[in-house]
Image 1 (spheres, rainbow, N blue to C red):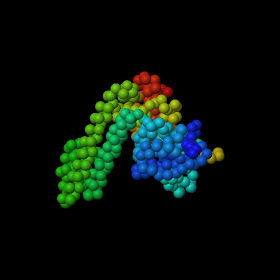
Image 2: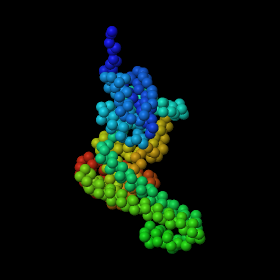
Image 3: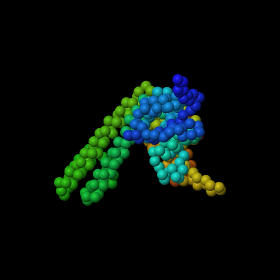
Image 4: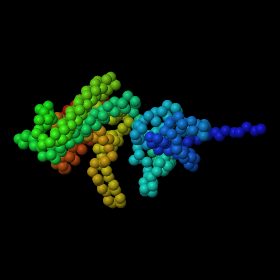
Length: 356
């Protein structure tokens, strides 16, 4: 009786696109020429690994999935098992109009595997675990800042909607203990309104307490050995304090991955959206594609540095002669990014008053 020959895929590459969901993964497998299979499985890395090795023994495997709720854990697990796995930006996967209007998990997985085999997509940067967790803490602080602002707006809305009047002589109120006590002592027509206002104030105080705690933890984190050197360089730049320096460091992580200033500006979102056709070229203003944590920090620091560095103030005045202030500050933000890149790459502290 002749022995059954096992298939051997040595020297071939198998491409695998995954559409990741919480309860199931849609898997599409192909080689350089054909789609080989399409199926669903439980969201477990070992199932995919065992299936590929059993079905296509001897092959090299390339796996890709879109960045999303599951983070980097799948990529790290597959890479540890010996699979070449990348994470891609969903916006970078080419899609036809038909695909957009007839979207399904099967189509999404097929697009990923197809573009992976064509070499048309690149993986995003995967941070070290320590830096990812540090970034999570810093981002949590950013979310608490947003929550605090929402709480303030809810209190103002409650006061306006209910006809409750504050001291008319104070055009601007600071959210101090005295102001909190004023809100607690405000006369309300009914007990229900009193309860609503007290709950809104208490919600604000709780969020403010959490924000204070998180800010202290971010400051402690900035003093760790792996952060302190870059932190010192970034904080030598006028307008960049501890918090913004931590945002910049945890979001950029490794400046060497940005080969040029243009690539850095593109990642941050300090570039315009453009469109051209024939002789017509249209600039649509600053791009919507950006790092939503980093760009606000850079713009905020830009408003400060023009007051503390004469060279940056001179540039700002020059731009303001040609455009409105909000557009001029974006130009300053690009200069600030250039200086951040320089001090980081050259490992030198910032010098005030240098034009360029």
